[in-house]
Length: 235
Image 1 (tube, one colour):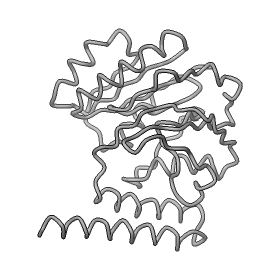
Image 2: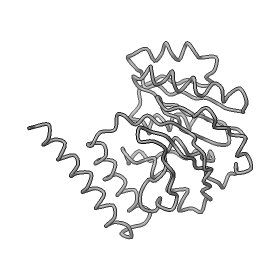
Image 3: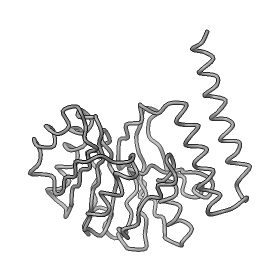
């Protein structure tokens, strides 16, 4: 059981250090390859990377075309059997233990955990994947197929990435434990709308019109939230 942890970062030196400090204890006990992709940050991210470089297996510092392009760069240089994406600012919870679930690690299994955010603990709803992204990318352990994120989806490539495994018969196993604490404080209403629209496109790619109405409602709901917030600030 060997795992590549891919962390992408851009101008989040504080969040990057938090993520690194959460990964280091995991490297002590497990076969882990830690990869950091930085998009030429202009803050102190490079200083943070140099500070902990002995714990980082691969470092790429170069411009990218967004978060999913950065993730793909990490996938391209990864060498382990499994992958997990732990973005800058996201952290493993202290008591998550890979070996506790080692019997589930298989090239045909997707391991799914719970995650914390500002709203509390979130429980994955695996069956809802056929309609929307109902998991957290940072709380999923994937077999490493060197599969890349589809860069045609700027805001929902993680959904496309996950749905590929779902529709192709991989077994999704709910570990019923918290894997990560996710920093989603920067998510805006505008981003929610774009994400809902992109998710609709992803869903249509795999299911056609089957869940189109459901996703159209999600898009219009996200748009309504965006318009409401804009009008609120105009008053």
